[in-house]
Image (tube, rainbow, N blue to C red; front, side):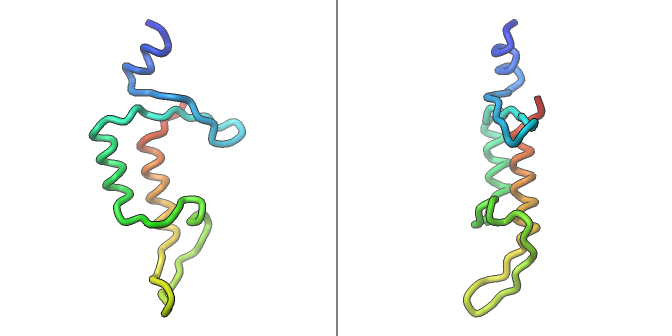
Length: 86
């Protein structure tokens, strides 16, 4: 069995490099996995990169309250569903 065949059997897709020394593989999306990610991300209207390291924002006249740590955590959960270690 070749490496590609084994990866396909294990639902493992392409390798991606997140940062220096951090490589992950993308899981091949099954219907159940796609549903799970959609359920996790339901209601998240902000980009991951904007949410990193921010503290909660209280509501003002111009905007709603935003729990940035919660948004960041939601993205992390979704990423862990679709990214696997080498």
